[in-house]
Image 1 (cartoon, rainbow, N blue to C red):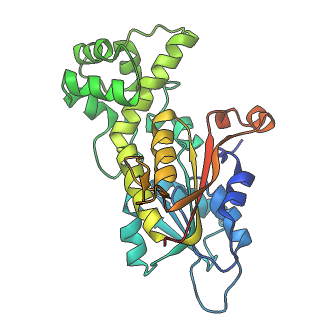
Image 2 (tube, rainbow, N blue to C red; image 1 turned 135 degrees about the vertical axis):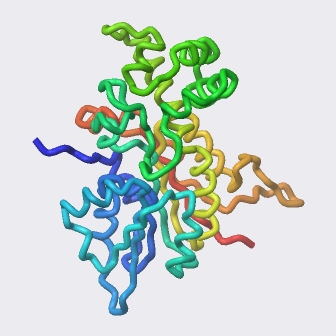
Image 3 (cartoon, rainbow, N blue to C red; image 1 turned 60 degrees about the vertical axis):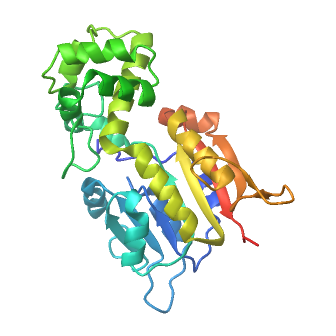
Length: 311
């Protein structure tokens, strides 16, 4: 049976939220398995002039290699793959001569491929090298991080990104077990037996989430992308974001509500709220039917906002 690279959550709802104009220009900053990009291209019109209408970002070159096997988008004149982190959205759009866009979509979930490929080190289901890098061409791995960071630094990562109350205790266990090279080493260091109870599985999931976020600077990249997206969107343009945990959702929620990373609502002299966005979706969840077919959609939240004309 062929591997399913990724099944996007709430595909119909996200595409509807984007409110695609046939002659518009769009950005999919999380290409992954290409589900959103293919759906967007189906709604775009073939223009007379040679014009790219969809730019799809992914920092993991395996996403592009997967699309080469499918071959659906490679020869589409409307589509351009961008091998890069979406934190550099502004730089790449400037490189391609794009000054404004009609919409942007970001599915912040980790692709099924990353969890299911043992060698990537994203899952505790396999004993494999503890990597967790989305871009394997550079940067520290999760193993590097664990073996180099101080107790205070590890405690910060586990407490801030894993929201673990026993972060300090877990950090001490990791340091005592150094060197740690694999997911198996990590489980052994934390004292996990062969049988993992549901409660301990939840704790372990939080540990892996914390390390993944730190390795890839996911929240820092998200903040930079949102800021660039706000500047690039035309009035009437839409930003569509799918979040999967409270940390990223809080950033997206506050940004779309206020238009700034601090989440502070600004008001004019008369007390009128000043924000560049009109909220369309405020945290929609997947239907029970979808979750039954795709359990990984359970934690997804859909947020959509429209850029409004500033006075």
